[in-house]
Length: 426
Image: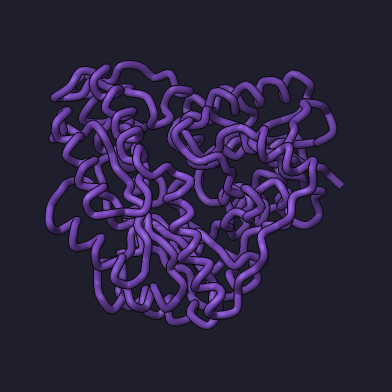
């Protein structure tokens, strides 16, 4: 029996964010596509120790973020030096395909389900790996996408202060929108691809965790499908967070009934449109974490200061500030490349916490200063821990009402030491 190790490389963490680690989604979807005949192991470098040694026959290198790339290619080099072949895949591999390809034995582009990964594994068994397996936009039938394989996770490592972290799950793929800082349209296509609702419900019901993160690119693409999904999820009594939901009273009510806990809501201006959208979410008992992009061409120093004041005024529970970053294959990157505004391509610094382009109405130093200003000012009077506690208070209250509340995990001294000494996570 051949041994396969899925490796998820560490990346530079953003110090402004809370110290916790979410169980990754890409690797567990990949694990589900590995045939059962293989002995499978998963290593998440954020929580697991990784020793480079010849205790595996093949490494599947799963990379999600651009800033994972340097570490991923370093690991690939080390494994190949001891004779272990490496196949790389994931979002970052797709965004940087030509660069990644030269550093691995094979690169897999696209989605792995419906036997697509089997082709690469069969070639590996025969010693005939091709350099590139290209299924880019050759999407598998959406009905063939089954549940992720979460049993490969080291569950006790995904706990923060006694609270198990949310499990990630998706009900759809693809996105019909083409937002200027986003590569989703390039990666997953402009077509909304919803999974059969009964398959989604089956997967979510089987997850031994009451709190989830629906990682769909957008829950604002098809009203009828959303209503059907939320109604089907309601009896499960799960509590979940997600990216933006369609701003429709009927949809919001259904989402709240289905257990929506809070939403990552893009806040890009100080308009009444945003104020009212946030208000409607809060009126339905749904918390709001503002996702705020700093550095677009319409912003200057004063604009960012007003934006932070606005967030405090509308009383969003949390805010996450990110610097606009020109990731490959996004509309904004195409524009910046034509204008010669990209400062460098040191991928380890493409974390959204550093300025990597020339802003229009600020200097790079001013934008960097405003990034720190935004984090410091928003959390000055109420720190992140207290704001997060407000969100947890809401979900705990709802769980107590419907009888699904579970007592937080009691940490052993060893696990408590790990929690207190762990690295910063996202």
